[in-house]
Length: 570
Picture (tube, rainbow, N blue to C red):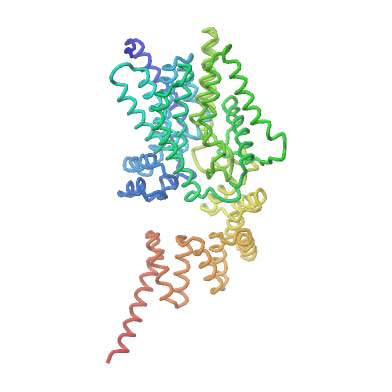
């Protein structure tokens, strides 16, 4: 392939710098944000990220992290060595990766001769639907996997267009980059299908050699995808009634989700951190209309390809292919709260955005520039405003409640945050709302019980814990909270039974383990207490009060043993 003239190279560098600048300006409010929900599991309270030997477990022990995305967690491990627990560094990395991804979008679309390629890149850079992926540190997996996905796509496209000896090296590089994308987030497993789609679009056919080149990627994608499905079910916990959906119901979810995502790209207001989970009923005919409409639009674009060209159909097909892993056909944990989330369409959005930019590119130059500029400015302002929400977790949950008042999850999570701040009355009201919205959720009853107990209403708290246990007999936190209440009321044997029930549900629940050990020690049962205290200290060595009790009990047990040995000696 010929080297572009120097003037164009300079222009490309200027456009790239402009895109990076736009991203940093649009996301400036988020750069000063705190760690928020889920960031503790990923960074701020993640032992593997903070320990020197963490990478061994991150890479070689499936289940050591919430999801098997070792490159993502390794990026956090490296950053922890650079700026510790200062969130600004992590935010800057996310924003920088997103800016680079926008540049790669521009380069890929230019390579494919899509009109308005750099306008599409600018719209991708500042579109507010991407705020969740960029401003939320936990979504590093999106921007990092996006970088490798787009880099692999470009390397592959160059490998099939470059007539020099570099073709083999570029092809090998594309596979390596694809593996890196899968190790960052396996939603990128759709890349092989996208590459075949692009080949068909540009050549009008797919031959055996095209398929043969893609087969290694297909196998890699299927392997990593199967691993992720298994991890979601057996380690993340995407099993239970919330995921007990028939294939027909999943198709209904997918059809509605496609239109939801497309509408948010066209009209990105309001946006929410979580959207309410809508009811699904395969017995209602009108719920079949969205998936039928999706198929009808695809068929219409196919029939019109001779008049409009194949581009619109390819953009729609790309959108659906890239969205497919998140459309509800596979169990993912967020389906417990909602069937849709803004960050699910981070890469899929490129298709509709590119089609819109191409439409603008075919207009006369002055109105095209005006419309493009206005859209970029408008989206940038909306992104700035949406980024403000991610400044703190409390602000995030309050905004989510305002946008999705019928969603139980933000009420519960804001309540938990307020409990940490000892704002129990306000937290109790939020838990009451969560119970009203989802009366079959044991967590909400247990959380409300904890608040009422702290507010001096132990009888009500006890009844709530008992109701939570009735709903979910194995609910660990409810047994633990009931144990606390009973212990404070002097019903020691009942409290011990509840702590043991909590540990039966989760032997690694350190709070129950520690409280049981200290309670047994206080009851003059040091031999029973010792094993629980030792395990609690092993799990949470920072709990100094537990270690102090362990040292005292261990000394007491040793003294009794010595006395017994002494009395038995001649």
